Image 1: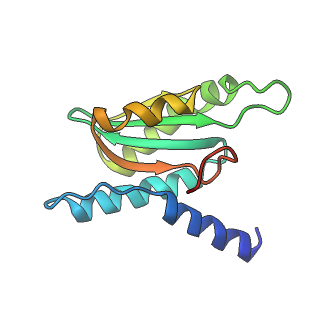
Image 2 (image 1 turned 45 degrees about the horizontal axis):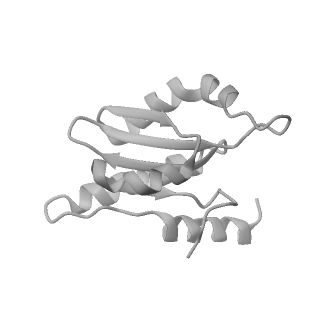
Length: 131
């Protein structure tokens, strides 16, 4: 990877990561958000990722890179979902619910109502709106 590409990716992640900061948990949330961003960075097949802290667990919602031959996302999901969930549990140190999302527009509307947004990462998605 070229240095300019790496720097651009890091800048995009910093712009794109949304850390939910509360008075009592600012350091924990920031750390959790950073760990999630690093994990997202290491998973090339995940196009977009949202993490929402709920009362029972961290809900991680992902969209995947489609396959080149027919645009299917299920092969990557079936091959990796269990491993990803285990890795995320280790990263955040709490229960994780991992969900596959086929239509990213639907999460934009409802994610705030379901808990505290810890991370919203989409720098890898060419269709994401980077305003």
